[in-house]
Structures are given as C-alpha cells and as structure tokens.
Length: 73
Image 1 (cartoon, helix red, strand yellow):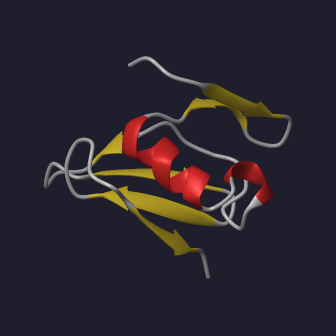
Image 2: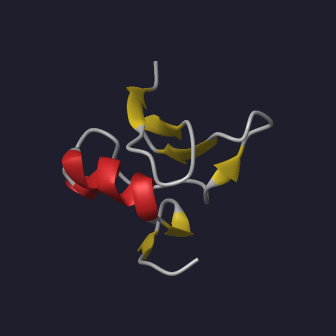
Image 3: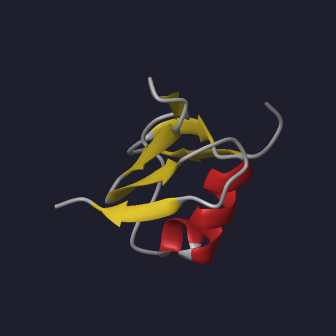
C-alpha cells in the first residue's frame, strides 16, 4: 500500500489511500465533517472495505471503487 499517512494527536497515524483518499478529499479531508481517520483500511467479509473517521465512516464495495461516506450518529 503506497500513499499518504495522516496523523493527529487525537487519532494517531493512519494511511488513507485509493478510494478512501478520493472520498475523504471530496468531503474536504480533515477540515470536512469526517475529520481525521481513526482506523486503517478494514477488509470486510463480503470483500468490501471500510475506514473509520472521527465523525463518520467510508465504505467501498470493491477495490478502487468510489466509496460512500456516512455520518456517525
């Protein structure tokens, strides 16, 4: 996995790559409503993936797809 690693004092360091980086960017990165990543990319049993952020999560149905960002709450 190659790409940027984002760090904050509150969440630590986490890589944000591929579709996750694209969707996070569409939502203004850490300045947007998702804020900073709290996990690395997580592979789901159905082959999809997710990454959690301070105020939401991004789900990707398959590798390099454009993901969906959902608010926590």
